[in-house]
Image (tube, rainbow, N blue to C red):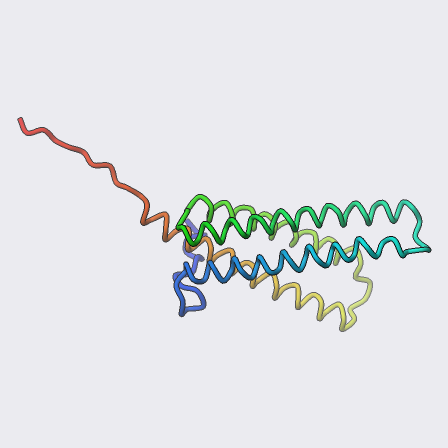
Length: 169
């Protein structure tokens, strides 16, 4: 399959895929914590908006609550992933790859749509933001591929070939 050829054989060319998957799990766990904290602070500051209409406040508040719940969910998924990597649980690792891959694709489309909606000029700020987003998406894609490569390696170890016995006549 094409995606198997993209999966790395080691993490950063130096470390094992298990160690790399643990690093990836810890980094994404930290990102989830930062996300939950920043969205919680954002929700608290909505109360101070005096010039906002009620429709704008309800929409912003509901989107932020939704994002906080999603980030909290990803926090627990990342904890589960770290546990799965330590215990060599292939189903847990594959589940993390699928959930995180879907999150990655969803956010990629969302950022693209938002950029198309709000870019009105080609200022330096927009170009720096776009370059930063592209770099972040490439790094996250590599992280997902590292976990996928680790899943491939533990899956190969756990495949048991059936033993057929022949009875001598």
